[in-house]
Image (tube, helix red, strand yellow):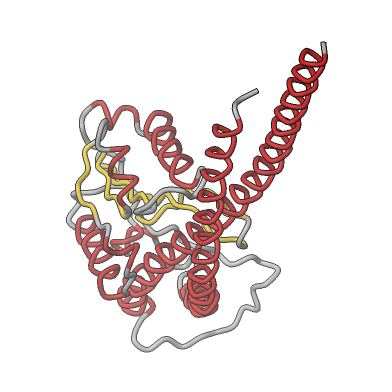
Length: 292
C-alpha cells in the first residue's frame, strides 16, 4: 500500500484527467451535433440524385459507351483514405489503416509489388501511419477541419480526370460511415469506375420516358456531379463518425476515471485509518512504558 502522499498525488492526477476527458466529451458532442445535422441534411439529396441516375442508367445502355463506366484490367490503383487529424477517438484511425493494409494485401498485392498502388490521405493520422510503407500521392489535412464542397470537388475532379486519361484503373474510398453517435461502420467503397445500376424488376414500372437530350448526354453531365457530391458526403460521413467515436471514447474514459477515483479514495481512507491506528498504538505503548 502506497504512502498517503503518493495516493493523494495519484488522486489529483486522475481528477485532472477526468476534467480533461469530460471537457473533450462535451466539445465532441457539440461538434457531433453540427456534423450529424450536415450528413442527415445531405443524404436525401444524394439519394435523390442516385435515384435519378438509376432511372436514366438502365441496362439498355452498354457500359463501354460511357467513359466512367468502363471496366478495364486493373493495373493502377488509388485508395482514398479518410482518418482524423487528432487522436483520442478510440480505434477510429487504427481500423481504417488496418483495412488499408488488408485491401492492398488481399486485393492489390500484384499492383503493390509493381509500385502501382497510390494513396490519397484525407486526415493527418492516416498519413502518419501509411507513409511508412506506402506511397502517399496527396495529403489533405485541411478538409477535416474545414470541409468545403469546393475543395472536395477539386479532388473528385482530379480522380475523374485521371481515370478518363487511363492513368488510374480503379479508385476506392476507405472510411468510417456514420450510423449513430455510438456506431460507425468501416466501409471500402468503389468510386471509379461507376457501377452500372439495374432496376429491380419488381419495382420496374416500365415507364416510357422521353429524354432530351439523349440518355448518354445526360449521363455524361450527371455522373461527374453525382460523383463530386458522393465524395463530399463521404468526407462529411467520416467527420461525423470521428466526433461520435471521440465522444464515446471520452465518455468511457471519464467513467473509468470515476471508477479509479473511487478505488483510490477507498485505498486512501484505508491507509489513513491504518496510520491513525498505528499512531494510537504507539501512543498507548509509550504511555504504558512510562507508567511502567
